[in-house]
Amino acid sequence: MENKIRIGVVGTGRGKTFMKPASCTGLKLAAVCDRRPEKLEVIKSQYDTDGTLMTFTDYDEMLKSDIDAVVLANYFNEHAEFAIKALRAGKHVLSECTAMSTLAEGVALCRAVEETGKIYMIAENYPFTKQRLEIKRLYESGELGEMLYGEAEYCHPMLNSTTYKYAPGEYHWRNQIPSTYYCTHAIAQMMYITGTMPVRVNGFVPQIKDQSYREYEFRQQDSGGVIVCQMDNGAVVRTLQGAFRTHSGIARLYGTHGAAEVERSTGNVVVYHSDVSRMGQPAYRSYAPDWPDFGELASAAGHGGGDFWVQYYFGEAIRNNEQPYLNVYRACAMSSVGILAWKSVLSGGQPFDVPKWDDEEDRKKYENDTWTPFLKEGEDPADHPPRAVAWKPLPEALDKAKAAWEENDYLGLGWSKKDIDMSFDKVKMN
Image (cartoon, rainbow, N blue to C red; front, top):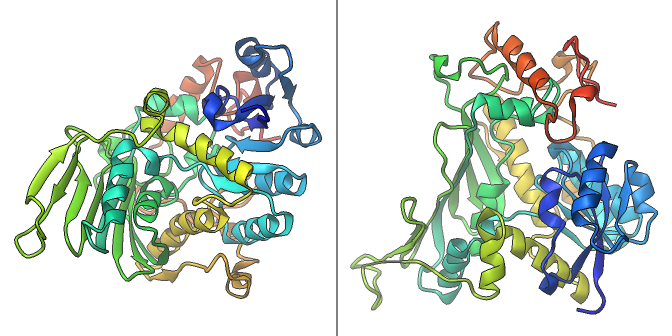
């Protein structure tokens, strides 16, 4: 493609995924922004193939450059602020998950997209594995009928030593995130496959008294969260997310005419039909699906190929000047599911309605809702909702975390050793 879309990537950790876009996406890396000059030097040596790559430690300065779009791979709870700045600077936005960390940020984000007319897409990659694309094809063909019930999971446990590298400091977002918040990998699958939207949310957290298996974790965090969503077609979707002690990324859909799922052991798509709903289909079949297109490129990409498709559809949206499926309204819907589920957990399972993000009158009710568990340095925890219900830190755990932070020159996701106050009483956040 002759007219490349010049992108600026924020963040040199997860952001590396977006620094070598396939030619068919139409994207070209033009700029990189990170707080750490030493990381930018490394990136420049690796990715500056023609001597034109711009690097910035100041995000506002990058927005003044001639890039067309911004890819946000910065901290989980900072995406909305960075996205709004980019939109108002005339840049398209591809934002990592989640879209926002408060409902008020979601309202401001929707308004910014509407006012600027720029393309906004959430970089949710889980719907774009070959298995989920195949289940979507089956669903749209009518073979499964209409969804009655769906299940989707994203459980990602990590060793404590690994967690410490990625989450240095007591104020790092990974050490403050409630167990329902990282829900977009799960709920996005069912939304994309079926075209439905969540309208009501309940949240639950396992409350097991014996937490000894979490020894040496200083983080105040639950094992995981369960979310039950009522969808706009009346179906129910259950999602599971968190740090349960086994990896799981299943997808399962029950329809009025049949069911389909991603088989955990093989990665095959399995399709079921009962005697009462077979409609000429076999009762059972299991097979390895193929990509609908760009198979070689998708297979080489991360997250089961999803990272390729996210960039491809972002480029398509910009070229066609048409908002993508994973637009700002769906981004805010799936992101707000985690926030509302946590409100539900803390209120004993009370259901909460999902804002109608494309309706200004409805979302206006949430424009001042800044409720958040994420603390900044110096803030009083009593002014924020708790970030866990089932576990409290062990006294000796923080000392082990501090030792792990000190041992690693690169502490991950934005911080190096020099950024840490070596007394470890506080983390420098500015």
